[in-house]
Length: 150
Image 1 (cartoon, one colour):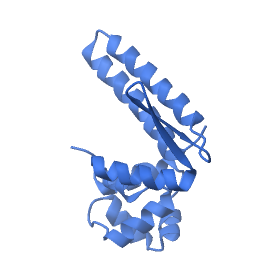
Image 2 (cartoon, one colour):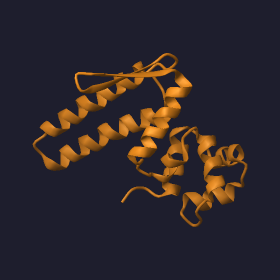
Image 3 (tube, helix red, strand yellow):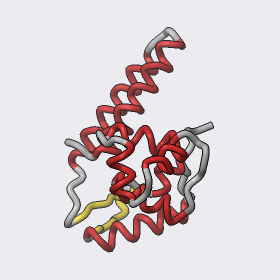
């Protein structure tokens, strides 16, 4: 089972270097209420979750830990295409995507690092160490995605 909304809020808040008080102020709520969300004592309503997500610079789905359906992915991709001048072409049975106004170089580089570390983990003979290496590879990539740093 994945992390709870509160655990996701706390994890991302810490990675962004924000205190509870700072995030609460950015999201327009009390520190006590945010603390209750982070500790799972209360669950935020949809509009509150949206404000917290916006204050953290992520989507509400990230905080909810939800998987996206294929149709949701297509709608999201269309919105991104519209905003960033996206184009797609099918070549050799594969779909290639490019954008006029979106630099994906850092994403490609960090994803390749993740894939390389995952491959190294798969080669590890010790099952415990293999899982630890796979988790570390994913956590590194996920952290980069959340922080959006080069």
